[in-house]
Image 1 (tube, rainbow, N blue to C red):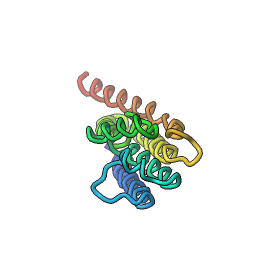
Image 2: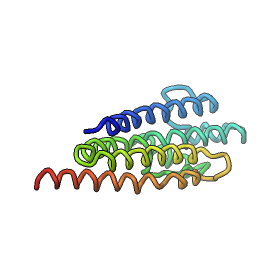
Image 3: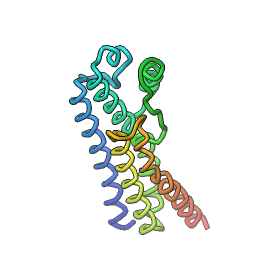
Image 4: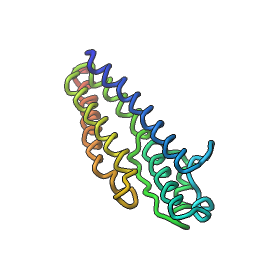
Length: 169
């Protein structure tokens, strides 16, 4: 495996840290303490218009970064009462382990291709996260500008599969 595959893989870990730091800054701006995973409908109902927007941006940043069962219930609760928070499956932690695993596997036989797909995936994740919290796009639609990460992720999957095939035959 080549050094650039390893460096690309390590870069995705730094990307995860960047996601977390973004969430922290949006959390602070929204005035939400830990361990609150998302602003809920009660917090949104009690908030001023400006604070609702800050809570919304935090929810979007958090959703772009992490997902768990509890967050789905928060999103459903918020959506039904106050505000539509986009619920996409394309967020960082749900996809990072697959991208990282296939990046490393593909890098065994096709290091340049694997690293290229990994870099495109990382760039897409940055555009996705920044777009999700866009001040000008409603309902998190700014995230769609980074949706090209899906194509890079598919490339990583195929590349890893080809690596396995080439090892077998």
